[in-house]
Structures are given as C-alpha cells and as structure tokens.
Length: 399
Image (cartoon, rainbow, N blue to C red; front, side, top):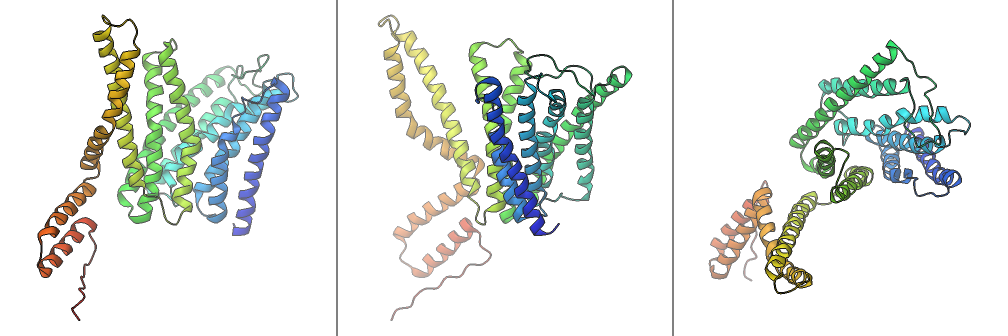
C-alpha cells in the first residue's frame, strides 16, 4: 500500500467514525427523546490516534487496529440505538450485526495490541501461534454469537429474534464454540501480557519508554478490573449501597482508562520524538496513590476514635470531624515525605542512591580545598549517578 493510499484510507475511516458519532445522538434524540445514552464519542481517542499513526506509519499495525476498533465501536452503538425500536425497517438485522460487533471493537485491541506494540511487529515468528489463537478466539465468538438461536439482549420495545439463528444440535455446537472462543481469548490475553513483559525487559532507550507507557496504563486498568471481578464473585447481584457506588466508580474508571488513557498513551509513545519521563509519572502515581490511601484511612480511623471518645461530652460529630480534618492536614507533608522516601528506596533505588551520593559530595565540597582531590571526587560522583561511558574533566588554568 502506497503512503498516499494509506493516508486516504486512514482518514476515510476516521471520517466514517465521525459520521457515526454525530448521527447516533440524533437518532437517540429522535427515538427516545434524549441523547445522553450515546457513548460512541468516547471512542474518538482510538479513531484519532489510529488515523494519525496509520497515515504517518502505514506499516505499523497499531494504527489500523485502533481504527478498526473505533469504527466497530461506532457501528455497535449505532445499531444498538437503531434496533431499540423493533418496528424500524431492518431492526432485526441491526440487532444481528450488534450481537457480534462487541468482539471486534473489544477483543481486537485487547488481544493484539499487546502483541505488536509499539512497532507493529511481533517479538519473533514463534508468536504467530498466539496471533492464530487470537484470530480463532474472535472468529469462534463471532460465529457462536451470530448464528445462535434466541432473542437478542437489546433494550428494544419488543423482543427481537435472531434472523440467522440455528437451533437443534447445531445450536448446541455453537454454544460449545462460543465457550471455546472465551477460553482462547483468555489464553491470548495472558500471553499478550507475557509479550509486554518480555518486550519491556529486552528493549532499551526510546523503545523501552514506549513500552513502559503502554504497560503503565494497562496496569492502572487492571486495578478497577480486579475490583469488578472480585465484587461479582464475592457479592453477586445483591450489592449494598456502598459497594454499588464502588462498582460504578470502578466501571467508569475502567472505561476512561481503556477508551481515553490507552489511546493517549499510544499516541504519546508512537508520535512524540521526545517522550515524557514515564518514570516520573509512575513515581508520582505510587506516591500520591499511597498518600491518598494513608490519609483516607487515617481520617476515617480518627473520626471513629474521636467520636467514641467525645460522644459522652458532645452529642454531635462535628467536633470529631473538624479535629480529624486538622490532623490529616498536619499529617500531609510528613506523610508525603516518608512515602516518597520509601518509594524511591524500594522502586527507584538508582535515584535514591544518586541523591545520597550527591548529598555526600556536597558535604565534602564544603571542606575540600585540594583541586586534584576535588576533581577525582567529582568524576566518581558523575560515574555513580549518571553512569556515562566515559568521563573527562577540564580545569581552567590560572592566567
């Protein structure tokens, strides 16, 4: 494919997504009276970053994967809205298309981005087996869903049956095929994570920074995913109010991280010549995440403790809340300092050792008068902190 054709195709797919994103809210407003349910615009990050990468680097599969996922997401949302009015012409076929589009826009980036990011190539030819497993998983899920008998799970005004549903023994085989596709998808996801870890260990320089950005967002998205999985396994469908709020927060956090954070990280990693310092971002995430948990636990604990102590003296809890707020505010700076030191010592040992080396050198510098000894100390400090391949020191002679 020539660069000109690639640019035309990439921006045509982006334009098609924009048309879907603009049409879906109008369709929702016409059929339901409001447009708040149209979430197709959340895929604009995938579409825009995919078009930029595919038009500038046509040989990179990452851009095309993002574009296909964005267009499939747009079609999925559009067909959901259209099929919600079962009396509309072609509503059954819109429901049929909607039934399997989820596996295209969700599984394609989830299964294959981890395998080919950032250059669009696999680690080696042996990983083609994993690609085959992913293609088999997507194909099995699509076939098992597209031809399964029954009624579509759509918010329609009346049930819509699958026009291509096949019953009998074939339907049972399709159900088995769908289950096999789920197992293959899970295996491919695990192997994709292994691929990211191996690529991170083998890469150096800018490539390592690129993979680190991708892995950072994936690890962040893993937190709300694990929360949702644990809640569904432990609590089931009957959730208390506070756990229901936690599920909503975890769900929207996962959506934002996947639909906004992931394409943003990919765009930063592939399109920028000078990457942001991802180590600083990770450091701040660990520090302020631990600080938030520490201060929140301290606040809740102090409120409960002070309420128990002050309950015989005061009937209300305003005094306990005020005292707890002041205590947490006073705890902020020392807690942040301690957590920063702990994170640097545990996860960023090189930075911690470099800071201590510079501090020790500054102490010697105040008492050192010998220029030759000072020059030797300076070269040792540079080697220990920056680790260059070669160190040379020039001193200006006296006139």
